[in-house]
Length: 180
Image 1 (cartoon, rainbow, N blue to C red):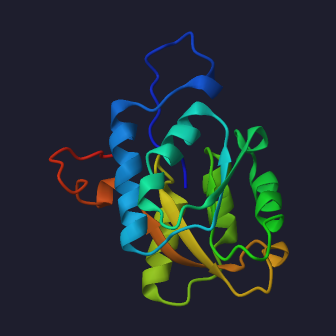
Image 2 (cartoon, rainbow, N blue to C red):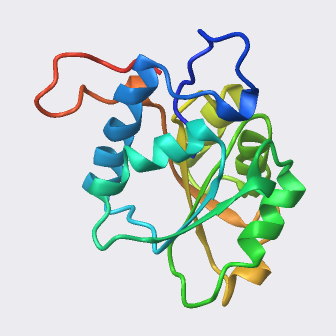
């Protein structure tokens, strides 16, 4: 998952400390609700420790039951695909559903690198959308046929979902759309 839209209003603020924008504050829970609806509940979340990634996760957590283990890491801040892949490979094998929350361009490039050759038209369409753009609060979901996370390699993941917040209806009970 790429973090939700951040606020650029305070020009003097360090990039690491930028919070979510009002749009991001709508997008994060909407994506959390979608993840719950699809049963994409992580066992473990590895999250950049930047303010916007932490806030994204915090606005999603109440949709995850049971609550996942969370590991915040400064090394995920603006990490490149190779570093992100290392994080995946270090996940414990007891974890069956891992979630990374990071930043572009690294998180989007990693998602594209993991996507294997499409098996059907739907998967091909998802991969084309992924190659086109990886916007804020965008979610990609992969399945891997491996015996442990250490075996995850580029082109080894079946891309089962690519979801942008703008493609989702508003959060239940809300008339506002996050349009991230």
